[in-house]
Image (cartoon, rainbow, N blue to C red):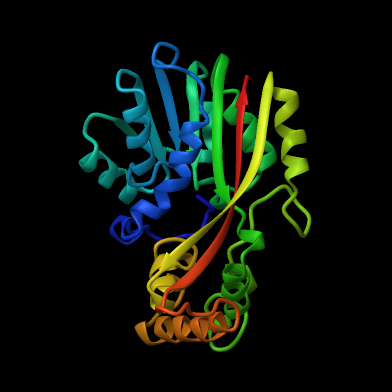
Length: 269
């Protein structure tokens, strides 16, 4: 969704399906609309459908449409959840969609999408009066792991293949830090009621290899996809782990706790 050319791997992403889905469960629980109030639901950036399935459990009789820019993810979602509609569609083109949804939901998507000042108002325009927009995404700008990835991209030997042009930009509202106040000021004038909050999830992973496995399915994928050989990709991962050791220590049982701060909002229009 961020414009870079790489292919998502649904199987890799789903290796941590339970931990990746927990924020979606928490977000879904904050939606106050009942079954008789939610007849049409949109899931933006649905991936392989793990968050969309939660919406189906919560609203068994609603028409639910999941969209994602990845054909691979959509194919997997259709196979795993044949009772839900899925379509390939980019989150930067939301105004092409209907504007009568009861719920617009997005989980761990907007960190890949530029122009939040345009995209978030477009999300709010997709719901009918009284409808709800519910959103969560990780604050990658605060995560040391992402800083390390970007630093490596601009160092030899990786810089000749990635460099600053290929380093994934952080998607937020501008500035050098994540600003919850700025997001509230964007959402509130377009809503009858808006809530914003942050939660830090501590993901317990199986050592440093577990951390690499986690990011192979998400944040590291755009970097690895630009490296032309397995040797370079393996070297990138080794250096990443070497630097990670100084940031996140192993626990007594070999586990590495990966903190991930996530931003949430729920807005009733």
